[in-house]
Amino acid sequence: METASLARLYAVEGPFVTIYLATPSDVPNAAQQHELRWQNLLRDLEERGVDRATREALTAAVGGHEPGGQRVLVAAHGRVLLATSLPEQPAQEVTVSVSALPALLPLVESLSLRVPHLVVRVDRVGADIDAYAGVEEPVESAEVKGDEWPIRKVGPGGWSQRRYQARAEESWERNAKEVAGTVAKVAADVGARLVVATGDVRALTLVADNLPEHVKPLWTTVEGGRSADGSEALVAARVLDKLGELARRDTLQLLETFAEERGQGDRASDGAADTVAALRMAQVDTLLLTDQIDASRTAEFGPQPTQLGLTADDLHAMGVEHPQQAPLPDVLLRAALGTDAAVRLVPGDVDASPREGLGALLRFATPRTS
Image 1 (tube, rainbow, N blue to C red):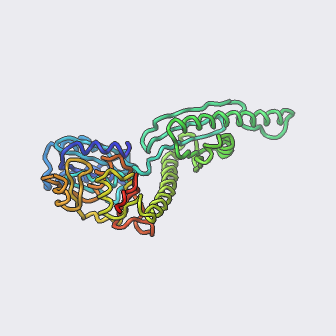
Image 2: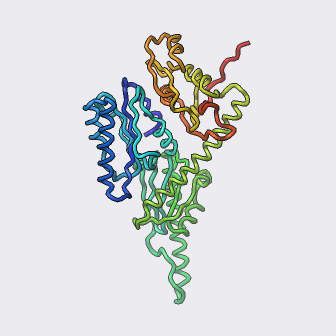
Image 3: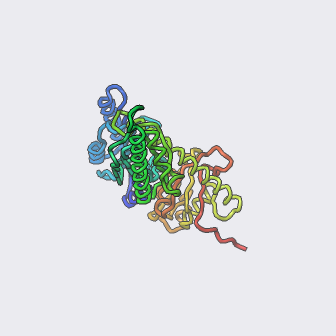
């Protein structure tokens, strides 16, 4: 799932039910705990006035605890519009929103980690290569099977020792070249920004040495093996750590760019009023939100993504007779996604952070009046 695909949710009229449900699988009595949380949640939805058809549709889509992490559900008028699982645990066991707009901010935050990447499991015979657009199932996979004999050096002694050692080294080198070529091809197929490799140390070194120069900066390694030896969960966690490091580097660069543009005063908006005005003009290239944004603050919106304002009078001035109200972050997300803007969550406690918890990098400068 890509962030841009969430825009289709706004084609449906609210109210929306949005649920973030913890689904841990590594706790005692996981199935019973999962069922208990869900039954408590259903009672809560009924008390909030959510209709029976919507509650039943959500129950059919909730799934079990087996994937771990959390389950995200969005529903309206008896239909589930979005059902997906995320690998990380939510901040709370259950978070529920019943509002005129879906509450997508935690989902967007998780999706920011979903950059195209490869996971490569290597030994001296070959490799298994999986390409991910996010952190779900791989979108492309490849297996490299190189020379299988000889794949290891013989012990000391014997007239043929040097010959076998040389042949082993030659086999490893040929296999590494084939793996490196396949890694480069698959990385190009998916536009990978990171290649995370694990496996035999010597094989990893040989593959890295044989990568094309443009792929080498993407290459990083983590501990683990190629075979299914029970380390899969650890490798997955280490891959997520590497993706998190990449996201943090991207964020720092983004904030540096924002601070520079804000200082020049023409291709950045800072604070609620300026950013809302930029969204109205479809001017926003990247919407920046921080944890300092006031989640209790509301905004008004109309039928079109660019119809938004901080007060109902703002909408009346645009010709919207009956504006709706929703939390400010949800209104901003709707406008951004509806105008093909990117959305990034950034720290709110550094000098380069936007004021009031929100700002934007702009596609074009606002014309100056003389």
